[in-house]
Every structure is written in structure tokens, then in C-alpha cells.
Length: 65
Image 1: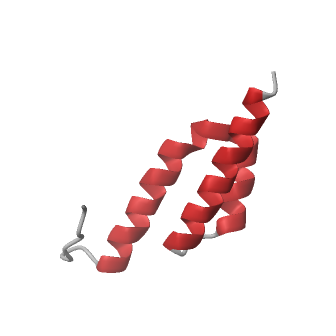
Image 2: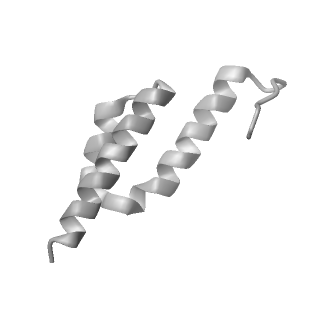
């Protein structure tokens, strides 16, 4: 029973750190992750990719390791 809240908290912390590293609104994403848990990961990933494409422009090359 304790596993689910711990996983949600770890996901929120991970998304907070990822948002900080990506230059996104970290508190907004951490709060959203606390409310939705791991269901937010695909939305976060696509939003991060959209912001990266916007920053580089339509003709820019994006390095994907």
C-alpha cells in the first residue's frame, strides 16, 4: 500500500528535475505530476520535444543521442 504514493512522489521529483534541466516551469510540472502520477510522463515528453523544436526553429537540426 505504501508503494503507490512513493512511486508518485518519485515521479514528481523526477519530472521536477527534468523540467529544471530543460528550462521549463518546474513547479507547474511537479504539481501536475503529484496529481496525475506516472500518467503525465508521455505528456511531459511531448511538451519537452515541442519546446525544443520551437527553440531551434523549423529548419534547425536537433541532435538526438
